Image (cartoon, rainbow, N blue to C red; front, side, top):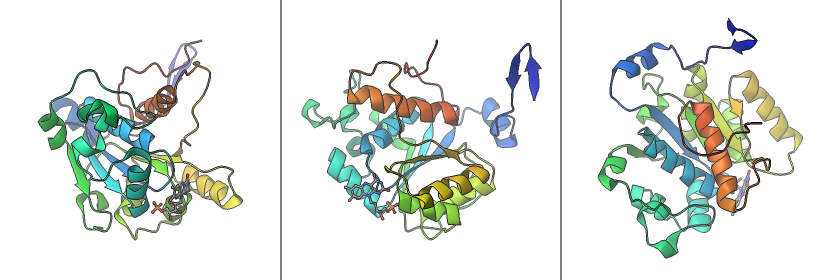
Amino acid sequence: MLLIGSLQLYPCRWVGDDYDRRSMTNPAPRKFVLGVTGASGAAYALRTLELLLEAGAEVHLVVSDYGRRLLADEAGVKQLTVTALLPHVFGASDEVPCGLRRRTQVPDVDAWDTRLVVHPNKDVGAVIASGSFLHHGMVVIPCSSTSLGAIATGAGSNLLTRAAAVTLKERRPLVLCHRETPLNLIDIENMRTLALAGAINCPTNPGLYLGPKSVEDLVDFMAGKVLDLLGVEHGLKTRWEG
Ligand SMILES: Cc1cc2nc3c(=O)[nH]c(=O)nc-3n(C[C@H](O)[C@H](O)[C@H](O)COP(=O)(O)O)c2cc1C
């Protein structure tokens, strides 16, 4: 711990790690794993994906079967390609799903496409299933109770839960954005177990203290919080400044 005046700085787990020191001298993009499960809140996932790609990150995306259903039901996303996943960025103006802002400037689709790697959830032999694959953190957003429970028990029967288990064992940031209400004791115990194992429980629970005017503002609050937890800079006004 570093003490500067009354400010206490605790070393972040990912700052100073060997792989991170390399990345500071290496132009290679930082890598993140993004898991999407079958809980309500497709817009949270798509906005997080957009912001990670905008920040120059390489994103390894894994979506559960029910996650795919949620993306289709809530956002009309039926394919896991960069243009289909980001209709508010690359689609027509009448294709913007609820909770997402239409981008005024369209980014270079090829540049974003090359930094999006989509893995089938059945492929537990994919690179993100191994600790040998160096990445800077994983977020599951939204995270269902089913996947929360599977991760809490260490079940690695699909790629998403296996990648989460690996992230924990490698002591990298694992952010779990659970969505369900109310919570039963099983969810609460699973969150407790995961907190003890080093995960960050970050429920999709946007604050209202910044005076949100729209669903987009609420979605931005959560996406900004996730990026803060992963140590990724963003320009969203999502922090309380007194
Ligand atoms: C439209 C829809 C909305 C759902 N919303 C939630 C939710 O908010 N939270 C949750 O835990 N499960 C929710 N579920 C149930 C999960 O999808 C289900 O438990 C599934 O087994 C999750 O599997 P997965 O974690 O592998 O995606 C929803 C299902 C559907 C079809």
